[in-house]
Length: 61
Image (tube, rainbow, N blue to C red; front, side, top):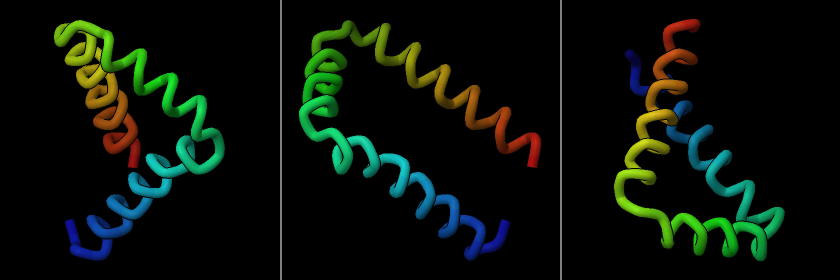
């Protein structure tokens, strides 16, 4: 993997992560508060699902 590809992927992640707070700060705040109330196991499961989806997307490239 080249440095350009890695930086491009990081840039896309940052863009996607920034869309919600930019477009709907109140909704983002409510979502963040709901996540903060979840148990650790629930948050880990969400992280695992995100990793699995990311790996599937990368495998299609």
